[in-house]
Length: 283
Image (cartoon, rainbow, N blue to C red; front, top):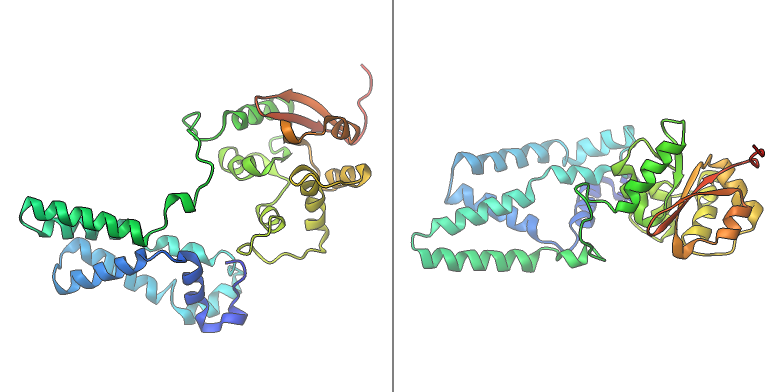
């Protein structure tokens, strides 16, 4: 997890990561309360699965001694938080809530318990509005913007490479990797997050050529900062950029064309360019 290291946290590394991962959400507390309740009052096979699965994780993936020894060996500190995905908190809380509701015999009591359970989960959980912004209706069964699908198709039609290198804007950068893994993203996720001021990404060496080349591209295309034409062009060459998908409202067409970007197509919201290191020979 970005900003957390075993060297600094020691045996508290797992606990610090757990706190950062769940934040103010108290669903894990409800999950543990459900396990305790099942032990004392409501024992059955399904509840036992949650119990023994949690114990297994505590002895392995969440064991501070094992983690402090193994994780640094495999250089997995920044990705360790993904182990918390393995803890079935959400299905567990849902299961225990249902069992609690049907523990009551009378219908009106079940209705009351259902409303109370829903209210508690809403209060201690994380509202979706706090996680996702700018809600939009899905445009297709792939649940990505139609612009992205069109851009990917155009790139593959134009390129003779299996894995062309593409610069996407922030809105499409992560989705592009998920929708079409054959496209190689010029702007690495951690570099994009770091440039945006994120404190949860991997530690970045700001002076490294790897980051500086990407920063130049982001400075111009993401943040509209002035970048010398030759500096921008060199960054595209050094990152082996082949295509750029630029939002129409952010595209300085004359600048990009002068830098060697050739207009390939226009979609509803984007302009797709092919980058050329040398000028095309007249046909």
